[in-house]
Image (spheres, each protein chain N blue to C red):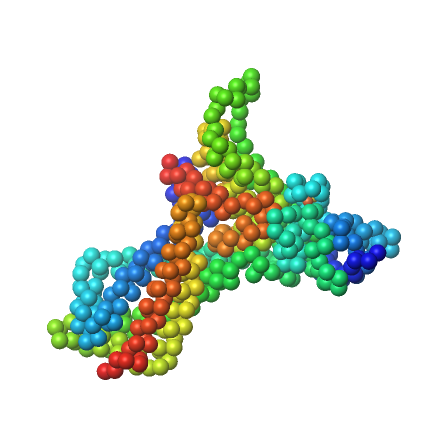
Length: 228
Length: 250
Ligand code: SF4
Ligand code: FES
């Protein structure tokens, strides 16, 4: 055994960290999309508001929030380190490389797609999380039961067409990031088996499309059908 | 002869490791479609020598797809446009009259250019020396039936052992990662009983050496698997990852 420190700084150790944080973020997206999709079921927003209230006050969820931020940061930090090392590994580029002949463009563009998602994430946190948690720049109005009226805020934010466009484009980036990321995280964790991998790949494609479409439909639905 | 082709080659010329190097145009005339890519280079080199120019340096040895020496990055792909073959197995019938063909050396920090198309792949040798072997006390040969190996394992080990160490996986990987090569060399022994005693130390040492040589990190684009002339599978990389984790935990 060479000790855990060398594991986490080795190429394979970093790959494990990317894979585990990736799968963790994949499961988070399911919860997030599931809760938000309540607006499609109940367009008064009461159901969504009470679910959001539960998420914001339950201590288990609140502690998971910390783990979530930690996961995101780890995922980003590893990505930056790995990308820098990968650039150094080929100091001189080919005059002509036909990469499309052997791999998919989005599998080679995870850094770019990830950066777009990060930019979106900052905007998105500013729209909802920072307001709800810290009241910056202003707090979220109270709903009927005294909880944050996140539904009202959602309708406010998505009344701006540009915001809707940014959200939808971000979900396109997310879809491609997940299309590669889903199956890639299983491979990184060493979970590749001729019996199961074809199924994992299929589930990954469905997951990436469904999650991104459900998220993208929210701003569109609110903009076109729900007004404050 | 009819059917012969006139081509333009753009070949990377570089005097030595310190030279900057550049692509140089060479018109080649009357190329037979039955020639191999390397034979075309032989003809071109003869012409260059006759003119008093320096011939183009390139690696080759067996010329039958088993040694892995013939490293050429042809038209943006290692070993050219065909899958499952090495450069020496590539024939000029894969090109058409009037084509311009770009030929570059493998590009990776761990594979420095020695001259023209020749790169130094001794990083692979050092990875092998760090653990890609089985230490045996030689005595009398065992009865083969004493060590039972399932057909499935034997086949998978054999497929992994087909790796010829050509470095096409590194050359094509956007990260210049050597994972496919190292995983093949780890797997060919990890799958067999003879490889078990040193299994954990082997994977740890080989991965450590791979990192030390300055190869990049795998991002699972799968380009290596497509370009590998021997069809080495990504399943080997997954197996290496599993073994590496167990090795780190024990
Ligand atoms: S894995 Fe394939 S491409 Fe890589 S060195 Fe071995 S034979 Fe060549
Ligand atoms: S010269 Fe040996 S594989 Fe091409």
